[in-house]
Image (cartoon, rainbow, N blue to C red; front, side):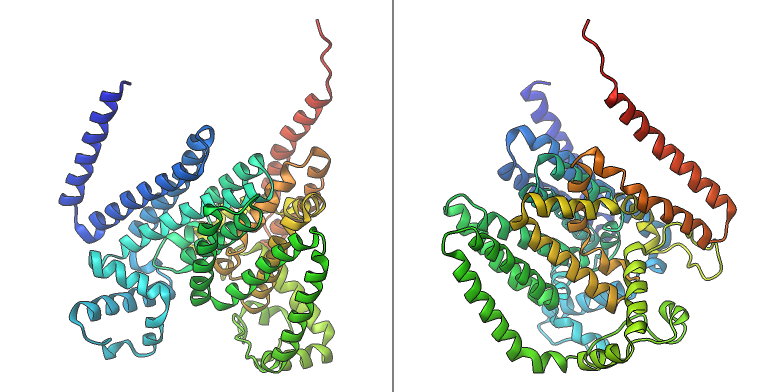
Length: 493
């Protein structure tokens, strides 16, 4: 196609899109379409500036696929379920955002009808929603489109972070897993702040790694320093505990770099002593900090399995209870960690057994959970390989992933929407484990076999067990064939 033909085609497409925006219902179609177009242009420009020309098309295909999947899933979900499919958080942010937009337009304060939701008005995401409504009208679909764009940006940031940690092959695999993992699509189905939080966290990590591991200081380093500071402050306003843990991971990056420099160990020791002194000073506040346990109480999942649950109170109360009941704490921690790693259980279809919920937002993540079940054992393998190959790069990410996962698992068991905040880091580790060599991959069966059998037994269905075994055979056959072909040596003719 000639250059003139391309220009004409782009002009016709642009004109058609402008007509569509003008003629379609604004709040339901026009506003989200406008946000999608502007965001897609911004993402394309971002990739064009950063990515090498030889990789540009591949990365655009990756990010574009992630954006398209999120937009399509959000459109299908909302057109099918409508308001019935919205989570309580989404309804709250929508109400507060619209109230803020009306208050900004009128120059008055918030209406009194919000009640307890007025506390959300100071949150950054509520103000983002309010800004969208202020500019485009009361269009939740426009915020959904914005979340889809943030999700696609998260795909690119996962690719970029994996490129910093591992290499090109691992980055491509991690990026495609992030694009296809449908647990991230849940963030884009409605007005939720999880997509923004994950995007800011990944941008902070990418900026910090590019700053610390730069070969020399330049203007680009100053730009990444400004991005790291800005995203760190914004992350603190979004979720302060994630900001604290991300800051500790960033500090580990600095310490790892200092440890490899002459006389750097002395600086590491001084920083370590400073952290220890600060921790001792904060101990009185930490032990009095309240723990907001979730999913606990009569009738909940854990209460049905455990005879003793941690007390509702402070960190000190938990410590006293753990010392008095070590066995109960071990049982609680083990069940919470395993259930949080596997939830939502993708083998339990909506309405298939008593107590199973009907189709909802979490059902959308089932496809991604099967992907996670397949790559989960490789996350451990990737962690071991990465620590051996480049410990100064992998230690901070691994520490952040472990602490965040344990925090979510022990305080919000089985809440996969919060657990998925850690999933980009786990997918990067999985990509490292998958690409490291065949001798490691067979260890995956040590995990897969018990998982599939336990899933079939859990729902007490023999057909499911047969399907699981058949699925095993289908998965195992290509691996065996590839392994056999690799061993065959074709003699030269």
